[in-house]
Image 1 (cartoon, rainbow, N blue to C red):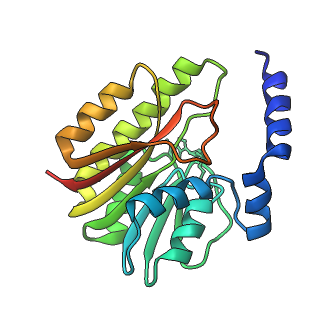
Image 2: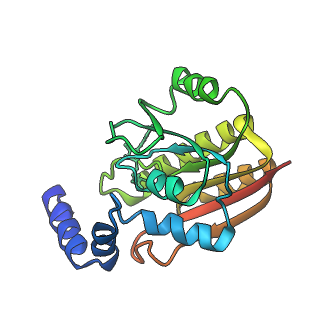
Length: 203
Ligand SMILES: C[S@@+](CC[C@H](N)C(=O)[O-])C[C@H]1O[C@@H](n2cnc3c(N)ncnc32)[C@H](O)[C@@H]1O
């Protein structure tokens, strides 16, 4: 499909989407917020006093939700893009894969953290299997980083795309964590290969 046809379809979908309308009414920057809310309702990710890293945070609805739901939180977000400041959340503009940025994240907390979230996704090219491979590569990188920075009872939630790399993510997840769930929140578009992996308790 041509690129301008993809974006016309995207705009049409956005207009008719109840989650887009709901996010506008409730003051969230993206419909993505409902995916995290549904994940949290099912797996109880948030807890008061938690320290949290939001990877691929722009435009910022996941950080908005985390700030709202977690009392006394300490939140750091990172994205290739700048975001409009959210409460006390600190933001790094840069590539998460860059070691310099990983060090910045570690230095910011100075100790292990409770929660790592990753909604990172590459810009879609229209080639679904290639997009899915690249997004799973980001999930793998985020998972390996989580192993280094999470507390033993920490939680890692990441976007993944069903496709040829899915098994690789699952195998690594099982090596690093004791408990793994794969979940497609109701607000995740039915025609998308998007799913989320919820990993808890380090081995
Ligand atoms: C689906 S959006 C995230 C939406 C966000 N969770 C929200 O609720 O507003 C995916 C984001 O991942 C970011 N991203 C992709 N690759 C990245 C990388 N290597 N480092 C940092 N951010 C990245 C993109 O810039 C994009 O903003």
